[in-house]
Image (cartoon, rainbow, N blue to C red; front, top):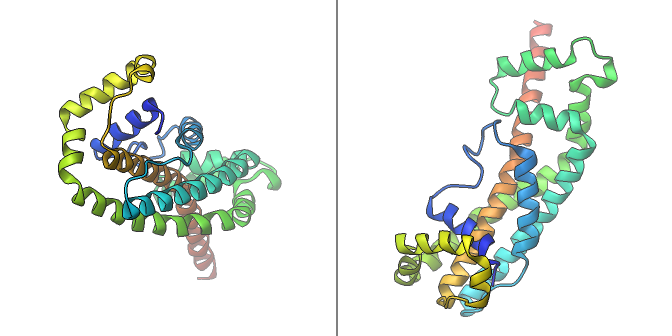
Length: 238
């Protein structure tokens, strides 16, 4: 069974119908804090799952595998960004810029800097080092989406039990659970196994999705930079 405070936080996000990342594609995300939180959740969610039935257990095992793979890729991503601090910071700040704004930001960053410190060559080095990570991340995005469909089937097949557990009264209980963890550890509330398994599936899905999206933001900005370079090259030719 997942730690209560971790589960409560994830299930509240799921009930609210949103990801942990506000706006998902906004450059205003505090990436350092988000990265730290995701890494912590990778550890706290672990690999244990609630056994229910063959079909539900199969989905749980698959989601554990996806979580472990995504957390591994995210760990590689964190290591990479720590080695390429200037690029990581530039990509984070400029993730939602238009082409024109991104070009201005690049020129402002590079102004007065020696060639080895300019952002363009650093982005290229970062891209070359991150290609394998981005490739794995894209594959995982597909797997996460496919598994979300499996979770939806489980939800539909157990709609009554999940609705009873996750209604507004249940939401109130979750907030209470998060603030009274020590008491709960001594007096565990009984939970219907399939509901517990469903909550675990949703928690793992949300974690994987957030980690995947954070990496995807950098990939998208790098692709935008590459497209800008092509446009500029064409303008020079003409």
